[in-house]
Amino acid sequence: MQEPIRLLLVDDHQHAREGIQELLEEYEEFQIIGEATNGSEAIELAAELQPDLILMDIRMPVLDGLEATKIIKFKYPTIKIVIMTVSDDITDLFEAVKRGAQGYLLKNLNSNEWYSYLRAFAVDEAPMSQNMAFRILEEFTQSKKQIEQTPLSEREKEVLQLVAQGKSNRDIAETIFISEHTVKSHLKNILSKLHLDNRVQLTSYAYSKGWIE
Image (cartoon, rainbow, N blue to C red):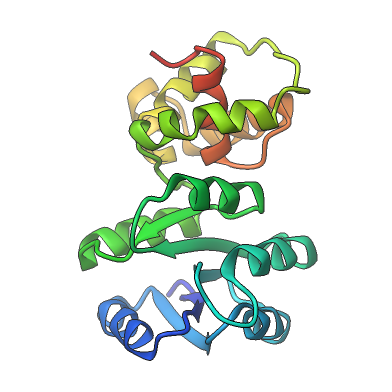
């Protein structure tokens, strides 16, 4: 049996934490191993527990989720962090991505959507809506002015188009008839060529260059 994905839950509202616990308890694939009520506690527990994934609220006392994300990703880059929010405030989401977050989850999603998204985030296949990519385009482009455009191979461009459509590695593999391992290899090469960190940044940058229709 595959080991469960170990989660650290960070939210200053007890009812919110309880709600997320209830939402995820039916899925054995996830295991909540700790809870924190602010960013400072999150940093301490990240060091102590070394979770696979952190669900991080933004607005918290003592230290907010954005700054905590930046610190945790600097100290423990392999820990994945997903920002939880009640709205798709573009400023907060863009700042989260800049600080190293793998993505975001709206708190009002239903349990099936939470499961699908968390599973995708955990294996680094997080989908991103084209609408959200377009909205963060302008700010993201400003932050990447120093990056020179590096030509991608035709296959890499094909993979990039499918990533921007929100497809998982498995979906991409089935669409263009290659293995998931090959998809991951292409993605690694694309990110390396463009000096980017994750799929969220990749999608936004592709829009900024006009590579995505």
